[in-house]
Length: 126
Image (cartoon, rainbow, N blue to C red; front, side):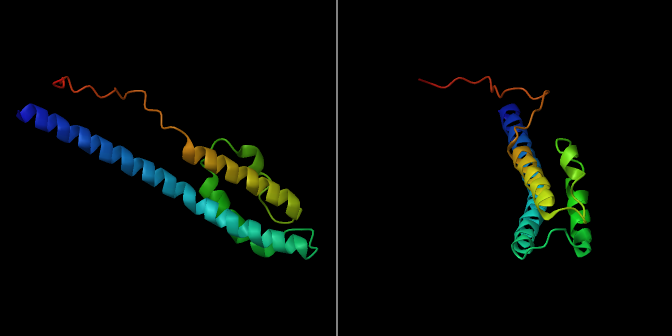
């Protein structure tokens, strides 16, 4: 009986660890999405006012976004356009592409090649 209890506890701990890992991954991707959303809103307002280029004052925020999304492998092309002194529309397109990649990454299935399917070895009474 102790063996079954220990095995059940181990499975519960594994499930809790996987859940914590998933939440940490989602939280890590949530911050850049929030920054990008705010920045896109401001860029749209600048665009509506007739501005053509991204002001230099946006550089620290763009650097922060680059630092947060740098480890994501699927977006190297768009990262080159995240800078000041480019057209507002070009930066907005790059930010939308990065955000799309972040959404894909957040919803991507977690692949664990070593994980085995749960088989308790017990049978239910029918």
